[in-house]
View: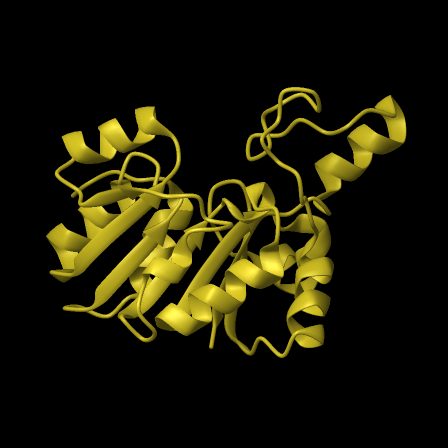
Length: 198
């Protein structure tokens, strides 16, 4: 079995075999590599970082170098079963436009992001008075690629306001486990938020 980041294994469980998958911000291509091996999917990755693209190519992944904010018009409407954005939402300049494009391109989209409302982030802000650094948000404020950090509540409100229909959510802890605390108080105890959207 291929070892991958926890949220990618969860995302893989939502994708049906023999599907067409577009992975935005694909990084080294681990998700598509896993899906090809275990689900027999056809997939393409998109990234803007040439080093990550090289890793994807080394993993035998079809990958395109595109800007997620501006270049997705190149994809036909309904050309994929799934469009995935795994822990890259916070790096997007215009999240609403991107999600609309993802919904145009795919039948279903899957979005995951690090939850800025997690208790460790709140404690760091409260006691240190500094921008939080966590396992899922490991950069200092002046070195981060993140420009739109959000909480789970922020994202749900954003989806409701823009008529993006959430069909499933799974909020997990740092080990990608969904326990009683993440179910009862997701915005406080959840570290990674995962959504299926139509």
